[in-house]
Length: 468
Image (cartoon, rainbow, N blue to C red; front, side, top):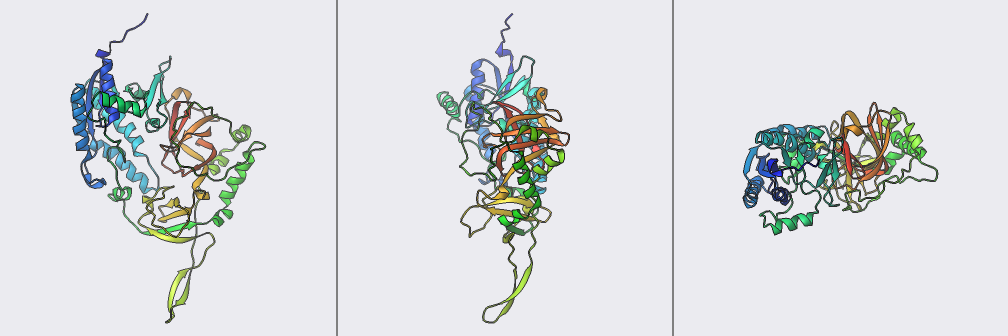
């Protein structure tokens, strides 16, 4: 017997941000016959931290209210700034203080939009919460919810939803996941929505575009330290680096060769799997499966930097004034000063204030205890590339709990370690010590604190925080 659903009896709360995506989400749901109401979240008060220096949320609220009026749905306002500061911003400060790189947008979705906001919506009688994310939701015959890539290959936003649970997904709707951005803009324009021409928001979720060091200085103390440039010679004598390269070579299939560093290319626009087959790994599956936990640990370790600099005295000028300088060191040199290692992230290029190089200079490591920032010149610098990472057991999150890996299992997947990164082919290995991800090719700027997210085809299966 076919069950006909009366959509008018289903109450949906749309998180209306004032942007075009959530506006069209609300409009489409209303057109489909759902009982729709809008709710605007205020999650941030401090205008002094934004680059614009004004309260962007006030303008966003004004636009959101106009959109709700245009569509003909009730509009409510909720202040979640206390929970946002406690559950997202304080987490950010704590992670940066440890020299890690958190993703506040992922936390905002897990802790605020689909938790605190959802609870408020339920009190208003909502059956579902809807957002303007570019992703799709399906349910299996067994009642398990799936998150699939958005149809628009350049706007897929599943990465930001990588920490959602089955309980949260049971209450969510993503009305625009099957559309492209141009299609959303066209719908908004045709419906004459006030947000039709509004630019996409940028910066930290609900805070706005900020100068990160200035934002972090609210709680983290500035302490000057050295910026150290690392030369290739350092890796020639580093036992861990040499061991990793030898071990990776030994894992290769016959006839395969290994690219040691990332070959730079401008960031690709295609974020989705685009229907392409996963392909085969260059590594021998039996050899990879046979790796001991200790070997996987060593493969996942970042290279540590301990470079000491000795001083020498010399006489300078006509008056032979005695001065002190650092002796030359084949491993590297001190090239500048910084205001605190915790304000820098691996892969960062801007804001270093270092000149005299023919190629760009990037942060390759930070040491918050020694208060040092290590940098390397060029896109192919050895310190920018890593093949393996680990997620600690307590940080592994499965969206598809029915597909969770057990210790000893190995699986081929696509993985990304940051938003806007095209999906990368990799092998997942579950061990008692955690989940190890071995990429087919070197990855640029793997940073502790980032979320690694893994996919099977177009479906996002799970995620976890990179441990180190």
